[in-house]
Image 1 (cartoon, rainbow, N blue to C red):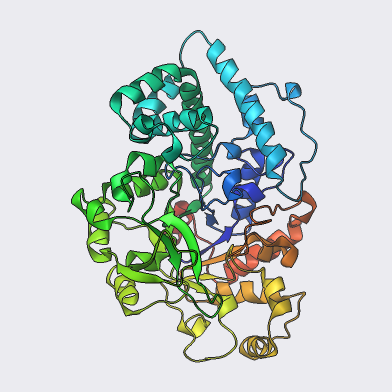
Image 2: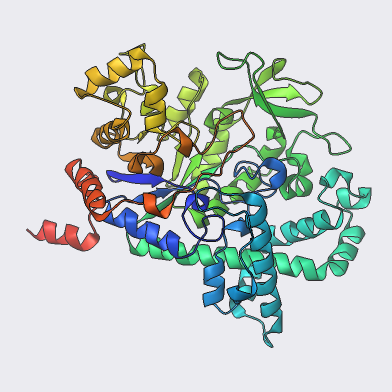
Length: 511
């Protein structure tokens, strides 16, 4: 990567009238903001479908390949002639400063149903839609029959469907596809709308010199089309129930560890077909993103496995993953290896060896840099390396203002001594942002909350909690003014992070 910078801001957090951020005009306006402030990357959370059962966490999905219908823009659907939004009044209960998923989801479902009805009225099929179905058939067909069956059976887990459908018997599936032809085709159309809108946004981003930086969760839900279609790739019993589940062991923050509960992979089985599912999954994500962060990277070396009957993660064990063999296969498919390792947390030597062998960029979070262990602390800027990615904070951290307000005396004093500046709750975000831009890391990222100076009220996620996460939205009046945009641009320019256009480079070379 060239020396550059980016902003972490999920699509749902964008401003707008429809209850949650989406792929409409405000996403294009945010691209303008990135360009005007000298940023070259827009970092996002996963774009897969979310579910109210899992509190709409983007890290808990029923498909590793599909796009989230809630991100489809009603505004663009109207421009494309699919809906007349006057027919769909905005529901009560939606807010501009927070995602209230219930009413926002109901509104989007009504809008998408109208778009589907309008599509069916057309006398001839749309060539783009037909091409989309062919190109994505390898995951789309299974995903859409899965959704149709899920709805038919009241959204229960697929293991509780009739056994012949649970086990994907050919005759039962053929009968179901005939019976559910209409809802299956509707879901295909909805995915077509998502990918069409995303492709347009991505093309515009590239035109403006902005790249997308995405995120791929390590695990996948048991209640997912991926597990239903590929049960042999997971540790399941004869009834397709998990025998072992995921988590992390006890540590200073949790005496019982964290029991995540997703099924763990059967890596021996995956190796038999050269990790085809993982490679296909990453190929799909590289249709959406230019660079991908591999979440929970340490599990590519070894993962914490707990028997499914356990109530906590205490009685688990470390199980080795064929990380070197896996990434060798990945490198054949993706020679440039556009992946960044989420290497936060407790690591051991085999993880360090894996990171070093494949030269993965690692994360350096400045909120972890100050306090004790001064010289040895890997997050301190003087320990950064060019291949690292520096963050003021992530979506799992407090905002920089919130962090500083809650920091201990030692952390505050260390930050003050390190920067030679007077740091207060009013300027902490600016101090950390400047530190990130100064770093030798090729890429510096800041959450948008740190760009506009928001406090703890603007948290995106609190790890280990399930309520109130993923709901933060920026209000239009909080967006930076022209003078503030110019200030941010000058900082990026000062620290060499404004990427020159090719034409400018050529002129410089000529001189």
